[in-house]
Image (tube, rainbow, N blue to C red; front, side, top):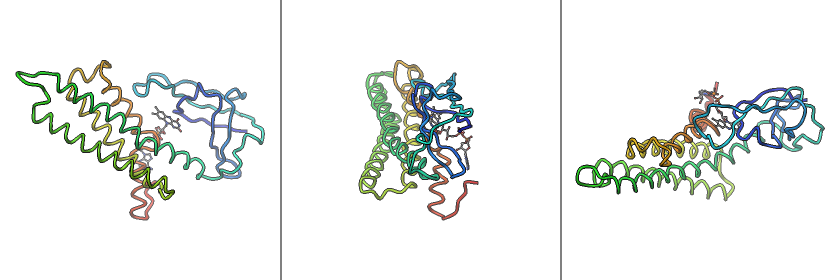
Length: 230
Ligand SMILES: Cc1cc2nc3c(=O)[nH]c(=O)nc-3n(C[C@H](O)[C@H](O)[C@H](O)COP(=O)(O)OP(=O)(O)OC[C@H]3O[C@@H](n4cnc5c(N)ncnc54)[C@H](O)[C@@H]3O)c2cc1C
């Protein structure tokens, strides 16, 4: 019998099945919960200004009674949920850069066509400095992602390395999106261009799959051997 609530679950109110990790007498265990089970509800979270294309919900479980077959048989303790998280975080190492790349491509095209005084915005040194620095961070992030992909394929990747990739690539991607926004200036704040949408969505990405702060703590612990989580 499961009881509890969890805020901020992507697709929570459209899913047929929820995977729920719960504290039990036998430690942390995973459960497959059909969302039409009595006692389960998933009210939608309204007024989001970020990741508006997907539904985000609260999961509420009130005396949700499940058969023994709902229990994931092998996952015990924190390793189950953490290994799921490491997979999702790894995807974000690449995905965040996709958003940054579209922003940068948009900013370059825009700067080439927008004329200020007698020449294109792209011909001003300050614009080129911004573009060069963004291309640098995008390229470094891509190399980091490819490197992490290779060590993941080799089966040697460690959680703190995934943290490093998630922290860096989301941080740099949101910085790129915001810098591109300045190149588009007023046009940067409209949905006529993809930049403000990516910047807003990256605000969520900065928080989910481990906040930047928590990834800093993971890396800090790996470097020092000291846990600073609490
Ligand atoms: C659009 C969206 C979709 C989401 N989808 C999902 C989903 O599908 N599944 C899911 O499980 N979650 C999902 N989340 C939730 C997300 O994982 C959490 O928001 C995130 O883990 C942070 O938790 P919190 O918001 O409760 O922040 P809090 O835990 O309240 O953190 C507040 C601040 O304190 C910092 N902090 C927390 N702990 C420490 C510490 N020990 N030391 C120092 N600083 C600390 C945090 O970094 C943050 O800056 C989603 C969130 C969003 C915005």
